[in-house]
Image 1 (cartoon, rainbow, N blue to C red):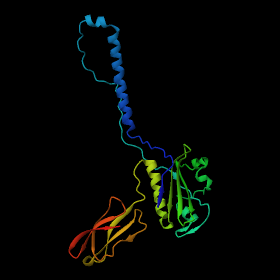
Image 2: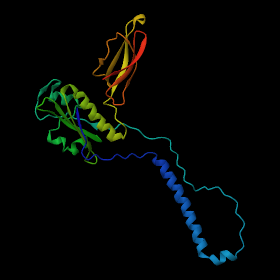
Image 3: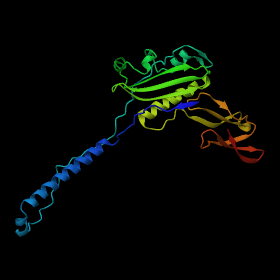
Image 4: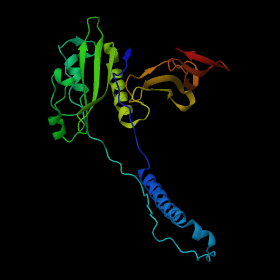
Length: 265
């Protein structure tokens, strides 16, 4: 799979703890005002201040004019995102299905299908009327070498601007992974957090009666798709882990009574 970098991605800036920052600034501003007032009095009559007797220290008084801000928690609500059908320039049959059928599967609801030119020039008036804050558009194209090109674009509907884009070239069998990579691009851009949609789970599958359990190494996508077994169950497997390169799997297996560490590429 070939991953292409987004063109001119916008930097994401998230602000947290805004109320505390406001309270802090307010207290500092109040203290600064008192300091300036005291300095003005000292500069106004320096000679008098030197000759006058020292006044008695006044009794401490409670400050009733301070600003107090209570922060009880943030407000969290789902962000409406429109994901229409991803159009194709030509309907081509692939091993994963026709390109237009794949575009329909990637849609997020019964929304209008944009034309191919609209993918890079959205009709913001229409999408703002749907209540969507963000818009995801893209396309699917069958290449001459049998691979698919999947384009993914993220737009801010209110600002009428493109936030990021990403393109993927994949074999038809990996079209789901292209969708996961598109979701990762959107999630990371909107939240500032690390993506996780294009991740896999490796685990030990156990079947059979208690006295004769069969343990096999298995792997699947994070959503349960593309499940397959990596070992045949003839030997016990334990503690699978992904290697740092994320391409190999390290696990323990018993052949006879001798434990050994194996690497599955």
